[in-house]
Length: 150
Image (cartoon, rainbow, N blue to C red; front, side, top):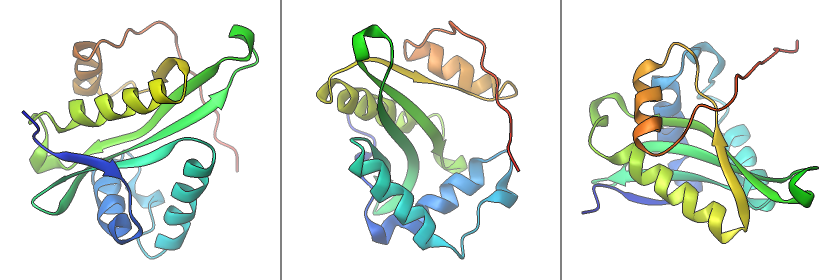
């Protein structure tokens, strides 16, 4: 049973998608809802490179979002890989299957693009998200590191 419609972001969805992103962010101060064109430009660039920004909608409202990045590895014989980023479901819509539908759509897009692997990272403090990803078949196989650049 489909609990939400998952589709590519449309320009008119941008404000709602950013609100979902901001609502789930550990650093919402970095999300500037007055600069929607920047978010839309990022979505267009993601799409131009073979990925997409997907939204989940219920009752004509954006209730979930994720970004699918497709890139070519300099390993695995130059194989294609998929990175999932910015996975967020609106707080009042969590635990209703929306995240699972978003991930399933991302996985299908990765298969359609010929990716041999799909991967994601999740902040260490997001223990509920970690359990969710494990239920969806993801395995914690690596330890990630990030360095913010000024």
